[in-house]
Amino acid sequence: MRILLFTGKGGVGKTTVAAATAARAAAAGQRTLVMSTDPAHSLADSFDVPLGATATSIAPNLWAEQVDAQERLESNWRDIQEYVIAFLNWAGVDTVEAEELSVIPGLDEIFALTDIKTHVDSSSYDLLVVDCAPTAETLRLLSLPEAINWYIERIFPVQRRAVKTVRPLLTRITSMPIADDRIFAAVARLHRNLDGVRQLLTNERISSIRLVVNPEKMVIAEARRTYTYLSLFGYRVDAIVVNRMIPEEVEDPYFGKWKEIQREHLQVVRESFDPVPILIARLFDREMVGLPLLEMMGAELYGPGDAARLLHRDEPMRIRKRGASYVLTLRLPFADRSSLNVFRKADELFVRVGSHKRNIMLPQALQRLEVQDAAFVEDRLEVRFARESAGASGAGGEGSGRG
Ligand SMILES: Nc1ncnc2c1ncn2[C@@H]1O[C@H](COP(=O)(O)OP(=O)(O)OP(=O)(O)O)[C@@H](O)[C@H]1O
Ligand SMILES: [Mg+2]
Image (cartoon, rainbow, N blue to C red; front, side):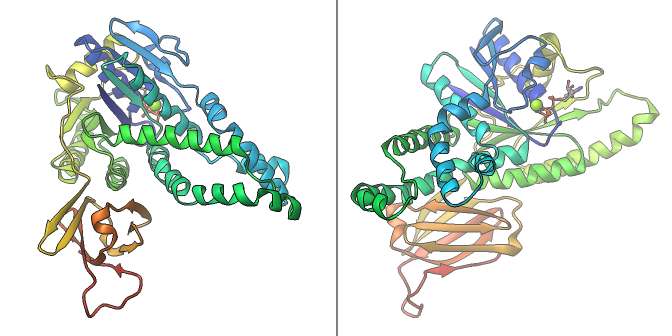
């Protein structure tokens, strides 16, 4: 079973490349489902067939579906949302505003992503190709399970225990709505769903992300940032797809300058993502609509090889023993190293690079050790842990470093 996720800046050709990859894999005999989790669906337009929220067969070995994100949101979030609204009302927030506030933007796509797990569990397919929402959106969404899990694991059990014992008292002294068992059950279910998807998507044997770019300055800059943050959250990119390259054989002088600019940008892509493989899709002479064109693009992109195979093995995080200390290595390519901050608090490591942060639940071996230093070694952040040295101050266990 393989899962390929396609993401990139708006309009770069994510849907087209995802559809072409699915068409190629299906033609090679793999039972393939291509699904779109972007609430703004365009898979149906790409294949030029009507599609719904359940898998529709569109060719031998090929199925497609556009997940109804709103429906998934309602079934997963309704119970929790009711409580949040009641709570906000109690706190003085108007009903309409409370409704608005009770849905975290992008939550619909995250619930659409939970369909991935449903399909994996059904084992009906060899390959799942996922057409994701544009970069920023997906990024935030992919990091959301981690954030929610953090909250659920840390705060929720405490609240739950407290509520069990003091609910009778609370209801007497305050009108504040108190979460009941139904809400706790809904939160626990949500946690299970999100955790399941996250585990699948960060499993290197199963899932790879393919970043789609165009040979354009802004698009490449955004893809480099995306790559850093994906890496920060433990997701693996196994290829960069450069889409819309003007073919060499185009001689028209009008495109001469464009070809030169594209060549320069392609070089930037190579230098930026090395050693991640780069696949090139030419700018076709028409809109890429319908299965025959998509199959042609897929064949050109992947050649005779298997479109779904793991094209590159990335290693987001490692922990090794070095003398008396442990070194945790995070691959963080292209990160803005001027603002690196690393510290441990209890059993967690907090890493902040630029404006992004990650909370890592540390393994047992590191939980009682202090951060000694942190520094960049090439594109890897190395954090050294050891027992507190005699000279160090007792508090905090903080350390920061620059490369
Ligand atoms: N290599 C190509 N040659 C010609 N046309 C292309 C190519 N790649 C994409 N297109 C066309 O560009 C348009 C946008 O592509 P697509 O919908 O795949 O982009 P997207 O990244 O999914 O956009 P969105 O961010 O809106 O989801 C489509 O009309 C598609 O047919
Ligand atoms: Mg799209």
